[in-house]
Amino acid sequence: MTIGKITISKLEAMAISVYLTNYRGDKASLLDKHAQYVKWFEPYTALNNLSQADLARALLIGYDVEVEYKAGDWVAVDWFDNGLGIYKVVGVESNGEVVIDNGDLNNNPGNKFIQHATPEEIKAEKERQLWDKLGRKVGEFKVGDVRITRRGSVTRTYFTNEADNEYREGHLIGFYPAESFVSFEEGEEE
Image (tube, rainbow, N blue to C red; front, side, top):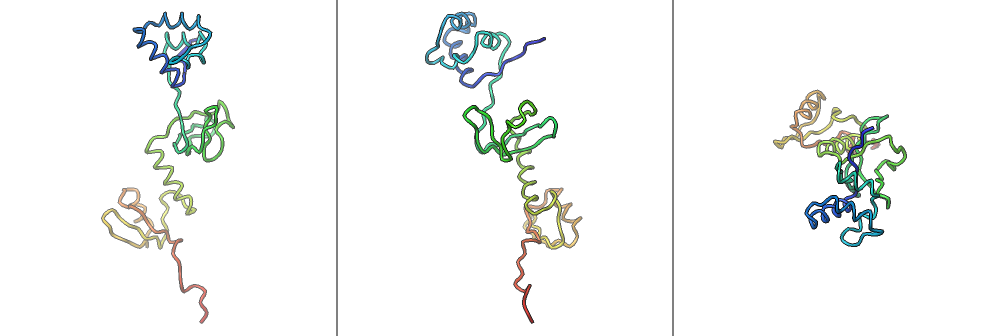
């Protein structure tokens, strides 16, 4: 069995860094003091959360710093049994667990991998949500949609393949869906 890097909190990493800076990188000294002290004081209080073994592992093998999330962040969650999803963080519980816009990530412990979403993933998810509100697939145009191109031209959609091409090629800045048209003449009696 191989033992790899440990993941520690940002505060624990800062405490280690401050100690090593103040004591010229003396890892042995840090380990000795950690074994002797019942409780660390400022600026090293975060070390109180680490066992002797975990501190040794961090110093000798290496460590990663926990990624911190906050409400409003976008995360990419790889549900190992259900593919990738992009979600907005709506909150973080006191224990650091992330709550996303479709529920708590803790419902499937050990069955996911979470990281910050890339700008491309965020853009694609926001766009998917916009199309979803219309009840359409991403890039699905209908006859009657009014398209606006990057050059400022406004065109009504008669042929959806033409609109699809403009969309795929990035020529559109937006469109007015046919469903949003309000008719003042429907329902009038003659």
